[in-house]
Length: 78
Image (cartoon, rainbow, N blue to C red; front, top):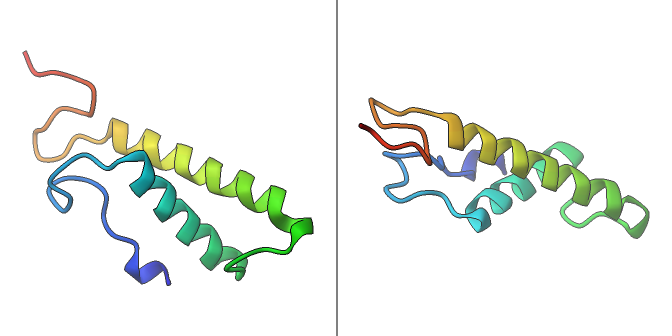
């Protein structure tokens, strides 16, 4: 399952990854690690928290990366 998670940074993804792209990758990762495609009701809260934590960490990573001389997301070259 994780083999199909696409790279979310340029140049593999020519445009910026959207929040939807990031959340989809996080969901796929948590599904793989937990072994649950759809968790039971008693596991839903912890599953959803994990997806949000992974999505946040992914957004932070992508926001801080500098790829081949490109400035980090949100920064401008002067």
